[in-house]
Length: 79
Image (cartoon, rainbow, N blue to C red; front, side, top):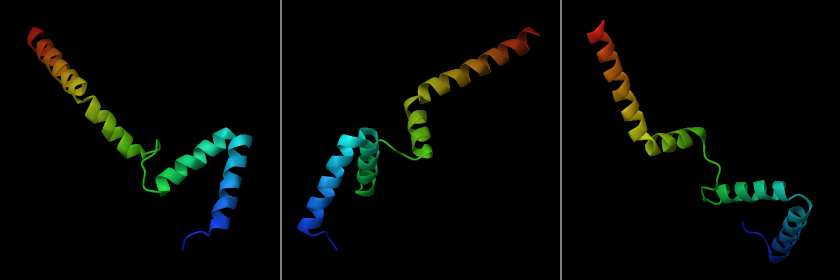
């Protein structure tokens, strides 16, 4: 059930007063509202952030693994 026009107006007034009084809290409430409305917002679960980081840095991870394998092989051959 949706809000009536009067309820929406009162809620808008409260949000406006909150934004003036405490902008940081207003930003957090806006982020929560965005998430609840289906938008991703800036807050994502840790697992999603970690997977995104891995996808963006996969080439660096592969290069590092290959370098470690090459150095271990060289160490075994020299010893």
